[in-house]
Length: 193
Ligand code: FES
Image (cartoon, rainbow, N blue to C red; front, side, top):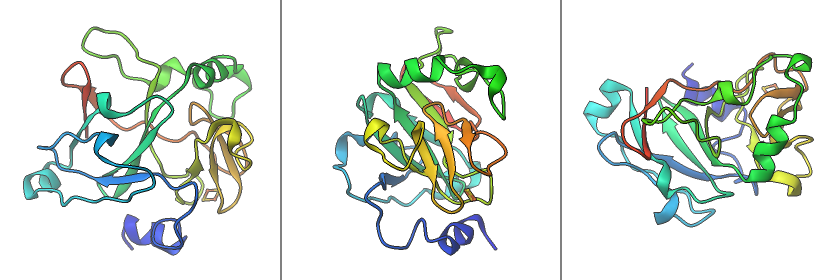
């Protein structure tokens, strides 16, 4: 069973569109993707070029993601969440006592420095796959999400709650939402994979 099939099985991708669903973008490495061209909750897909599929990498222009917005990009059959966090979300992530986390990791440790060696904590990049059994979490609705107890993401399959850094805080998931391998290739564009 492929990863994509697994998502379908749980109904998170092809079932009834959730009110919490995000902009969903499959992209090509040769075409940087931004959310500016898409209006929520518009669902848009572009076919990845053959060389992109072979390389297994994508480029994402973070400059096109607005504060408070999240985009979802397909990478190697998995969704990658790019969330432009508000200061309130960053502060909430920083306020957590790392020692008490199930999967201890500081918020800073979940970022890759840009070309200037600076960590931009506004732009969180994660693999959007629950670490329990692989469902796709919903959320990052901040305080208005009644299902996410920590203002981040919530996995409806078995009730895992992730905070605004994507760290597991409650429920059966054993580890935080993964950070994919990525690097900055310009001031705003990252290459994932
Ligand atoms: S798959 Fe997410 S809580 Fe079980």
